[in-house]
Amino acid sequence: EEACGRTESLDLVPGFAPIVALHWDAGQAFPALDGLEVGASWRGDAGLPVDVDIDLQVNARTEAIGDLNATVLPLYLGISLGVFDHYTPSQLNLGVAYEIAATVVLTFDAKRTAWDQMTPSIAKVTHLTVNGAGLEIPDGTATDGNPFDVQLQATWSPRAGTELKLPRFKLWPRWGEWEIDVQGGVGYEPTPLVSQSTATALLDGNRTIFALGRGFEHDDPFRRAGNERRVRLDGFFQYHVLQSGALDRGAPETPTAGYSVDGSPIPIGGHLLAAGVQWGLEY
Image 1 (cartoon, rainbow, N blue to C red):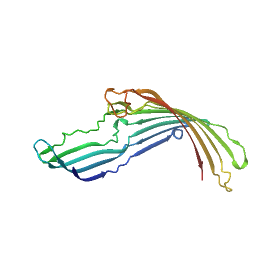
Image 2: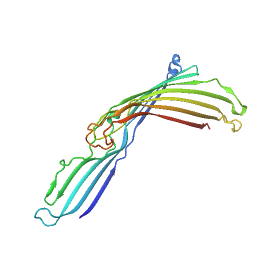
Image 3: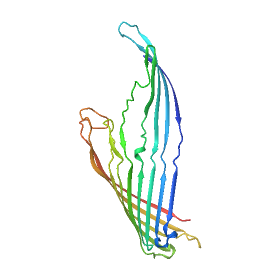
């Protein structure tokens, strides 16, 4: 039998993610580069560090241990846990766009995400002491029972796209001039996962993205006289392809959480379809 008493303390440390962005219209400074725009943005890393301290006292009753009589042993455990929750790594975005004769727009951007600096949201024992009558385990003797060893790398994700603006036309007088544009693009997202230990089974692979879209813009048919409001409706379609592969278990003869019982590899791959619409009113 045992009696248990426990006290806990939880410390939350607020943080912030700085964001810096720049935009430059090259045509304003150099007329020969009219239609060229360059942009960049940087967002710092952020997260919610959580420190948990637990003081645990257990009165454990022991019986039938050699020639000893039934004995009650009070044990005191001091445990400190460290967790870094809701972490987002720093990110750098670079982009360029070029408009040709107000008809065709070509875009390219690249995104660098510092996954190599990421702190996983997994609790780790940072301090542990056990004291009792005739028993003492100093800090550093006990080990964390949640082994975790994952290596991540920083990634560059390129994207390219184009937009075609069709000639304006009139369909109904109250709807004004219609503007229709068509977009298309492709992107590539490499996996940041480099390696992991046999204690985990994280699944990830390189991803290719294909996208199509169409936009419609016209005057608000319910506008009052003199109010030149515009209405816009956009639709998009995306097709994501995840690179095929398999995650092999390092020790097939040892049952491991996350893997199948027979030790067969876990398949990776597949595709994802996404579609959506967006409606906007200028006022």
